[in-house]
Image (tube, rainbow, N blue to C red; front, side, top):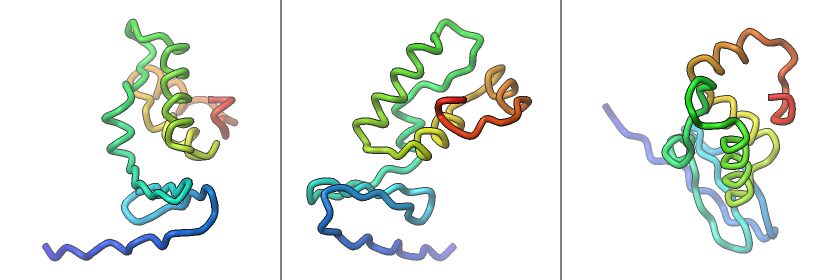
Length: 106
């Protein structure tokens, strides 16, 4: 398999910017420093919510929102990552629901 090099992100002069890169990579440039975060990093940093164990939904929401603040995620990124972190009973429940289009309704 031939590996293609990833395109490098250009540094921007703005104080904060977030944009989507290749391979589900989120590039967040803030105050002149650039860091790359992909969903694998998120999965390794946050516990998934299953809805049927002792991990409370309040704790899970607080953990996701804390990570979002640290990483400078947009509301769309919080929603997408939050939804991807659902597993088991909770994932099945959310898939059966209609109209869940934001982090607040998730």
